[in-house]
Length: 274
Image 1 (cartoon, rainbow, N blue to C red):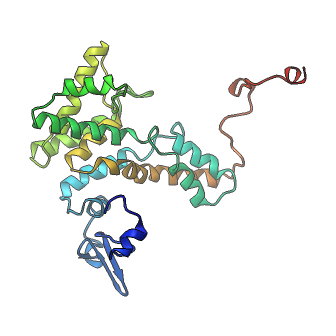
Image 2: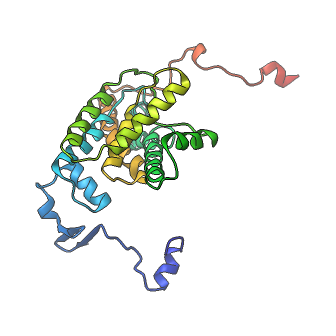
Image 3: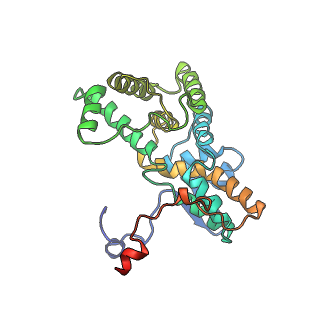
């Protein structure tokens, strides 16, 4: 049915909306076969997110690790475009939800998309290795020959990101207990060592890289990564937009009114008149 128009599907006997996620009727809400009242108070936010998305129940230990990823990505201050945009919108008189939406809408392939890219590479590499048709080195070569970057490494601010260290520690505990395999974390480290050797300098794993490896360990689809990051960073966006709103500041633009920060590179008035 993929690729068909909704109307064509409907005319061929399908429902207008079809979903395996939820069945909502009068006085009844069923989510993936479970009554909502049985879920309320019995599952955590991360367990519910995983259940909605993947359709499987996540153990308490794995859910704690998943939630740690959400916490790690929740905020990175006004240096982050999504946070800055939300705060700026809050000074412009829009509604609070519009300020939050402004921040969320900044998240995409460039800002917030590295986790999806890293997950896709890790999944593809494991498949290639398992099937005996490639190695970490060969997958890296293919990536670089295609003119693409290796996401998940390096950071413009941190050279020893505390988020990464903590997530590695938490992951290691689950590897030791057999809750996760650790294979994707090992692949991530293999990539780090190879690229560091080639560049003749030590590259560090960033929060996107470790978040990608953990989500692969949990079997989360890479295509869902940007949505998950939006939920994670959404916490910080809400907090920053609210704080800016409380300050009562009006019209805070992208930068102060200083000539050195904004430079006109078009024609001068004299050139236009000549």
